[in-house]
Length: 414
Image 1 (cartoon, one colour):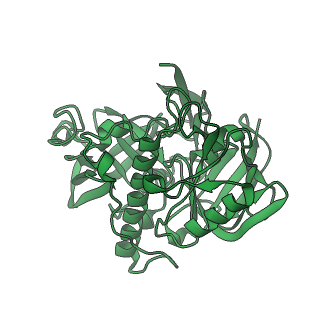
Image 2: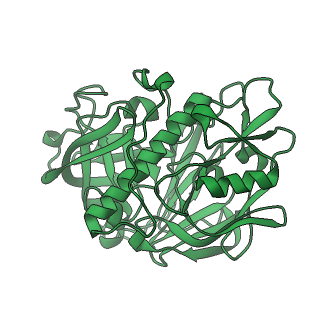
């Protein structure tokens, strides 16, 4: 496979160092994988779309459960739905295949003393860190994960970690604190779970775990996420991190925004941290000069492939642009003529942020078809009027996540 790199920019020296702040880039080569809902021949992958939608629905179900347990209340207009399950045609697969091909924006981290290496997915839509354990006895290779007994800095914590991703696909394990390092930036006392069960997930994602970059309120570990720990331990010079997502040379920038990746000003929009998500208010979706739906919330999620909205709102959008609904297992997805990809843009009261035709078009319904599937699906995620914007949105501009301003920001790519 081709190779590309996520560059993690060093934004600060380690807490224990008295030397000046380091500035530089470290290349982290990872696999360049195709879009998670498009096959190698360019057509739409029906099974992948179903699997990823089930995964996303259960991910946000777990987020809402975590928020309720941590705060005693659910975010406004949110509902904890029953767990999403796969249709019978897919439910018999064991293991589930390549659920997140092309959706995991990740790279290496190390945990423990001495360091133990792992590859994780950077996920702004969750708040916890987990990696496979050396004691994993289900869904992984025993002996090849994190070993607490091999780390001089491991501290066992009370409680148990568990999250469900898709039907029969879950992660669970004990809770520890240990040193966690990304490209030289070390969190000294970071909570995480070495998963002893990871049915379906390790195989599906092609990674060793997930590193959440959300807010503490949605943490099932009831602890600060990795980047929040870096801030509290004064490891980074700025409480911001940024994503540049592309087919090649993608970049996660820790401790600010990389001016080499964008031009002009960053347009920031406030988020409500009490909701637990990178959730901006006052969003609208347009096609050309026509605003179709407005006044909704939007979660920006690097761990999700496409975009999701409330079914009625998404239906209104496609009705306006000439799309037709797909029935059966693909309910919530829409088709349109391949030679007439809709113009799509989002706004939060500033400039319009358009979705390119390449990022919106998931390919023909089947090889040779003149109808294509859109990267916006109508799904009830239990989030009320909130829309979920994943890679299909984030690839179109530079994306900044600011704890300092409690805001998300967007800038034009260079």
